[in-house]
Amino acid sequence: MQRLILPLPGNEEFAAQLAGLCGGELGAVETRRFPDGESYVRLHGDPRARAVDIVCTLARPDPGFLSLVFAADAARDLGAAEVNLVAPYLAYMRQDKRFQAGESVSSLAFARLVSSTFDRLLTVDPHLHRHPALSSLYSIPTATLHAAPLLAGWIAANVAAPLIVGPDEESEQWAGSIAARIDAPHVVLRKVRRGDRQVDIEAPDLARWRDRTPVLVDDIASSGRTLAAAAGKLTGMKRPQCVVVHALFAEDAWSQVSACFERVVSTDAVPHPSNRIGLAPLLADALLRGLRD
Ligand code: R5P
Image 1: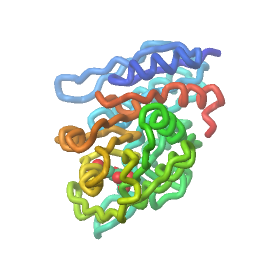
Image 2: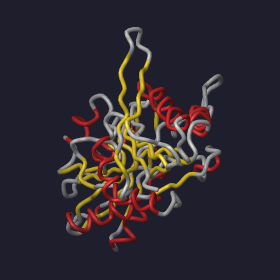
Image 3: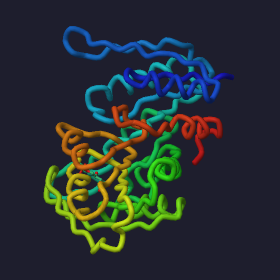
């Protein structure tokens, strides 16, 4: 039976692409607030005996999270055979440890909430740092897709003689994989985070790469301080470019980051003016394969 694809508000365009690519029916989720601020949710589309894929990227998740839970619950209650979460960006992955006494390990708490609501989770490049895989956080089956091949393809098509630069040790996984795919050199800088909006970056001597265009790659641009500080270390080189997977660009991040680079592009995991790399084909393929990696 045809899948039913239900976008939460803000995800309609991505969901329409998915539905077109995997032959699913595109439904809708109507949401509004009651006068007291509580959430009203109504599904448009018949979930009975069907695989229902609820599409909701999870950038800035707090205001809409209950609507997402209510939509999933309604789909199940109305007879869905399975209810899946398609979240191109997965939130709450970075507080993966209790750094100070009394802190909530929100990555675990959020994983428990999502796991109690959905049957399966499909996402792209979740920020796995201290956890090796989503299966160590989530109790439901998960499919983790990777945007590196698409980032590599964009760089190969748009930047001559690139030097792939990762801003910190964690980015080695993306920088190394992208560089290998397009036969380009890569370097990884060193980052010490001093606060939410304060990072220090150290770079090795990059003089031998002066004839190349540095392309900074990272999974997430949030406060933008990592990318801005890294760009500041690329002095004496060609003006850098930047490619990120998840364009959160919180507060003033976009103006800070865009001023540092010749060009900043991102995937459409999070809707943003910098989006140039579409992920719908990658996710549609996973849906057609039954949500396996
Ligand atoms: C963390 O280590 C990630 O890979 C990113 O570098 C980080 O989340 C970016 O955060 P911000 O934009 O706030 O510096």
